[in-house]
Image (cartoon, rainbow, N blue to C red; front, top):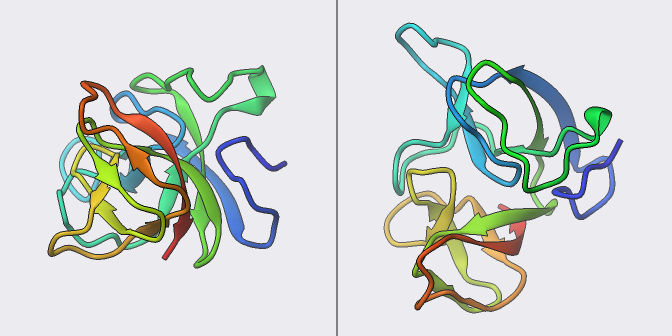
Length: 145
């Protein structure tokens, strides 16, 4: 199964699933909760410009017919992929973001991507996207770093 969020073909991805600790939208950069009551569950990557242990991206749940705009709720089983370097992902660029093709991207701390400042490069923009006037995140095609 290759989801819409995963834009290149296998073997660039390893599929997995886990329980959401909060809302997650397909295309979000995600991570496991490291401690507390939700330890081991999934959440959006929560540290702006922070390290990313595994490049994991939520995908739509094709088994129940959900599309890329249907978010998972707290407690839902989230389908996701571990993306290897070079894998193409249909991710999110943060609100007010503006990047050129080839730009290095990092986590914005809310599951979306932003132009790299000082953090770990998570992906590279595969297209130029100007969302500088936007109040909401927009989709962007990226290659996993």
